[in-house]
Length: 265
Image 1 (tube, rainbow, N blue to C red):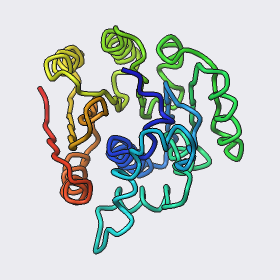
Image 2 (image 1 turned 180 degrees about the vertical axis):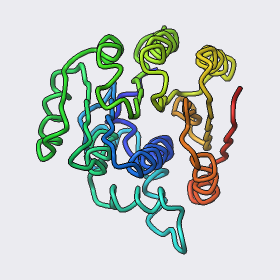
Image 3 (image 1 turned 90 degrees about the vertical axis):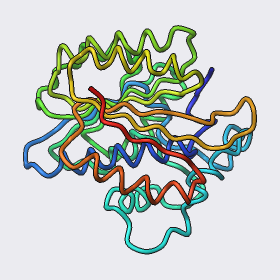
Image 4 (image 1 turned 90 degrees about the horizontal axis):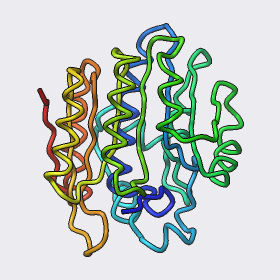
């Protein structure tokens, strides 16, 4: 499976992942002390929903495209997400969403190994002095960035799943990262094509001993398209479970999706 960001920008999985990221960042901003955001597979930062890759899949139409008419009071993280992404022709990826939420004291390290994507990411993040792009392998670079000097922060791991052993690489990177930065918040995205495989990965993550929460979301999709994905959150912040439960209650009917939020032990 190849989950290159450009083909899937703004789809149902992006919506849930990015609202979760917004909720975590909002929590970190409640304290006056600085925090770090580390994005291991950052992509290009901004995506043209009318471009060739997005048009090839058309997935944004069943993601962000379904949220334009949400009405009534919204959970804070969902309202903030919609303000950040807008409803124009470009969709911001996770590093750009994070950069837009940074305070002057906070820092973003965005890692992208593909040279062309990294160059575009530098352009997208140029306005933010505390946002740094590294052209490197996210798994290899992560452990060297931990623990961050701020001793607070979130690590987003959102791989493209290009490699057949991606789940094994992901689990190994997460174990190493947690050993170095046990108090950090980890937000990990994964596709669910085989439930047993996804559960095996979650089981390995739980072996770190960190408190954990999982969110799964599923939609009806044509054969061969992504129809189910998951988020794993290690060390979920206080109030995150309740916030995301409220978010999912609004997103289920809008996205015609089924969701499951579960505290794991």
